[in-house]
Structures are given as structure tokens and as C-alpha cells.
Image (tube, rainbow over all chains, first blue to last red; front, side, top):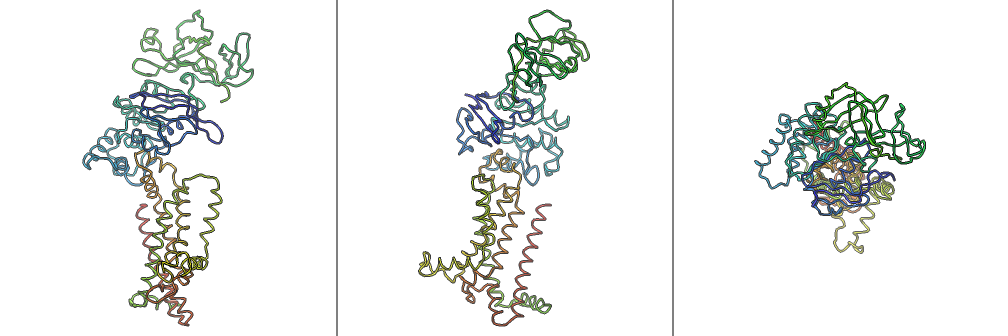
Length: 339
Length: 228
């Protein structure tokens, strides 16, 4: 049984479909990151999953049970949600925290203890008496997450928990979110891919309201030119990526290359990969227990990211600034028009 | 005019039993009317403020029209409903305080409803969703919403109260201006004026103004303190 499931969910605004998910299944205890550009449908998906917005069609299943939209409160106790810009009621943070525990079976003492524990964990205990409306952006996010965690709902949905916050808050949040008990399911959205890989077991990329074929480490806007055996997708600077199918001549496409399918070498090699570029390493970021995300600037204007193991980085002695070659097959390229 | 003000204060603080009776009747009916209007207007205002439906603009126009209902028209309609041969005639409510309350509720409810629904529409849309996401049921979420806009909500009740305590048409037509029973400050003023007792009528008018001013002041300080 899945913790959360979306089946044929569709939502439109002003006649434009902003979310179209044929199927999305999230297991109990899963750690899922939603990534994608602004307007890709992350917030809509999370809001529907939190049962705060009804989809135009399709079903949401919580713990295997279909949500009845006339009575979403039946399933809301299982889900905690934090909005991208969290709202706080008038009054102190303590009062806001107490709101989340109203109606709970806990004794007054137990409630106070749980609130104290959550606030301390997020490092905002000293602010309990102040109104969250006077907090900095990072403090507000930490307070909102403390509030969302308070009910200990089995499913936690966080919309952009890491946006607009300072480094201290980011570190605290990463520690708390990354170390959630395994009996709780986490779905969060972020723009930070390396952070997504660090925290999540699964990274789902959304593009134009749909689940993209791969994560968007390498997402480019390119123009198609038809060739004898497929297409060339050209960047504004003139770099061409080979694509095995014939696209529409002159049309602009979103082009995605799966970072897991990018090969990195120190020297040029002969292989079946049709896309081979020389570049300089711009960054090497941790992206999980043993994986790193390497960004190479391929001249003139194509930053290509590759997901590698730490061992590969060590074995190849790769350092920032070093020259490398990146390779990927044309079948690793995905192109979508009309976005 | 100055003499009228002096007389008004003298009347108010002399604890004149006749004046106290009028004040008592006025407050008795107007507080009940405003309270009932709030009970109807709050939930309807929240629902109307949060709902999107076809024909909403038409309902808006009708509600705004109801804000300007002439009191004598309401008095006339309620009279026709309560007179002995009318549908509600058997209840013998005509010329009672209950009759005045019925008429005043018709006057006050559109005020509360419109002001609450407008406040809800202008309120932060995240209030209800935040409450729901924190485990609140719909009722508690709506109460949280009212709590966030409580200054405007209080103002709506105050506006409704101001409308009904100062009206004369309903009170006169369905109350009957019976001394000790249904005579209010406003119908008392009307009667005194028709009897040529202008100074006493003016003084009673000043009493009404002073009382309404005092209530406004109390509400101002209450909301000001809540805001700070």
C-alpha cells in the first residue's frame, strides 16, 4: 500500500492545464523531491496532495484510500503541509504552535513539552513569545516547519522549504528534514538539485505540469534543425546536440539530458556516443551519500551536469577548473516542444 | 444647541426613569437585532466571501441594494406579515419588541453579511488553508478566519447596531411606540417633536449620539489594543 498516490490527476487554470499526472506513487517512508522550474506544477501538485485544492479530474489516494472531496478532512490528519510562503496567525509563535495541537488528546503538559521539543529542534525556541510576522525569512521557515511537524502526521509535504533562507537556517532545515524518522513519508519541492539528491531517495522532475522523463540537471532551450538521420538541437551559442528523431525544423524545444547518463573522461575517447564536448569543471557538489554532481562548462554556452560517484572523482583526480570531456548518447536526450 | 447639549448630559446623568426606560428598550431590541444579524451574517458572509459561482455579481448587486432598504418599507412588510390576518398573525407579535427585532434583523443582516464577505474576500487566502493543513476542521478554520479579520467583523456588527439603534421606521410601524414596552429613543424623539417639546427631543437625540459615540470609542480601544 502506498502512502500517497495520484491517479490521472489534472488541474487547469484559465483553460491552461497546469498539472497532468497520469500516475504518481509514493511509498511509506519515501523521500521524494520535486524539482522543476517555476510554474512547472510543483506547488499545485503538493496543494492537491495536501487536499487543499480539488483536481479537475483524477483521484488522490492516501494510505490506499481514495479521498472523497466532499469530506477531505477524513484524510487530512495523515498529512501535514507547509506552504512556500507560510502564513502565521496573529499572536505569538507559541500561540501558532498551540493551534496545531488544539483538539489533540494530549494533556496540556504533554502539548507544552512537544512544542518545546519541536521549537528547540528547529532552533527557534527563544522566539516562542514573539509574533512570527516579525521573524526573518529563515526564522519563519523554521517556525513553519516546527509547526508542520508538531502533529507528527505520517506524510509531510513541504513546498520549497529551502527557498529564501540564510545558510544557518538551510543547515538546520537540511539536518531536520534529512533525519526525519523513517516511518514518515516526505515530499518536498526545491530548485536545488544537489540538495534534492542529498535528502531524497527519488527525485521527480516536473516540466510544464507533467512528470519529465528525467531530472532537469541538464535542461536547455534549443532550436531544432532536421538532419539526414535525426535532428540537431542548437544552443544560442551554436553548440549542437544530436537527437535520434526528426523534430520540427526551426521550432524551439526544451532539451533534457539525464545526468546519470553523462560519461566523464579526462581525454577524448572513441565510443558510440554521438554527443561529445570538451569543458572545464565549474563545480563539484555533494549530492547524496556517495554521489556528487559535477558541472562542466562546455564552450561556448552549455553547462552540462553529470552525476558521478565520489570514487570516480577520486580515481580520475577531477578538480574544479580541470579540463574534461563529457559524452552522452543521442538516445539519452529528451526533447519536448510547446512549453 | 448648547442648552440642548447641557440638557442631554443632565438627562443622561440624572438617571431620569423615563429616559432610562427608553435607553433600555432601545438597547434591548437593537443588541438582540445586531446579535441575530451577526449569527446569520457571519456564516453567510464567510460562505459568500469564499465561494465562486455563476451569478455572483447579481447577488452582489441585490445585497448592496438591501443595504439601503428604507426602514419604513421594512416596517410596512413586517407589519403585513404580523397583522392579525397575516401568515404570522396567530403569534400576536405586532406591537411587541419581538416585532421590532424582526424588522431590525432584516435591516441589519445585509450589513453584516456584506461587510464580512468583503472582508473575507480581502483577507489573506492562506488563512483557511493554513488552518486546515494544521488539522482544523472547517468550523475551526472559519473561526480562525474570523479571528484574523476580527476588527472588520466587529466593525460590521457595530455598523449594523448603529443602523438599527438609529432607525425609526420599523420601531414606529411594528412597535407602536407604546410607553414602557416598545418606545425607543428614536420613536420617543419623534413623539416629543410632534408634541412640540423640541428641547427635550434634542436632548434625547444628544443622549443617543453620546451613547453611540461611547460604544464606538470602546470598540476603537478594544480593536486598537488587539492590533498592538
